[in-house]
Image (cartoon, rainbow, N blue to C red; front, top):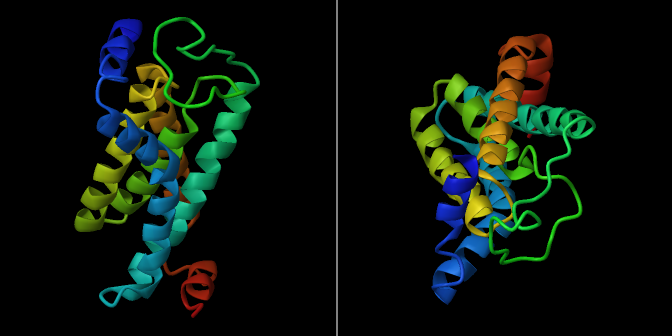
Length: 180
């Protein structure tokens, strides 16, 4: 089923040059745009220190999720779907293994961190961005659907660990959120 769904999502690749360019662009600059969106939250006017705590939590979840991915890559060596003949690749091939998707991990870690802080409007906006990023990775042919799901799980796990370990209004949190 994973192969069939991945092939189906990637099936539209190469048909519309506009859609191809759009998905390649989302894949390439989506995560940096999300990081920028989180960084800009530092200057929020409403509930400033809570939003700053969410931004720091998102950064920590992002990093922790990617660190977990590197550990997983030591044990899981899944070839890319384009190497298996499942997808049509629209970008240059990647040199690393397919599972899990770092783009999915990074984007979903940010969404999960904001969701866990009870910031629904920001969470929805970030979720839309993350959904597009995750979908683009399959569309352009570089990941299987389950690579993206696995990346989303590591992102959520990273956010959960940060939520438990980095407490709002702790001495460290007050020190960090008072910067600037």
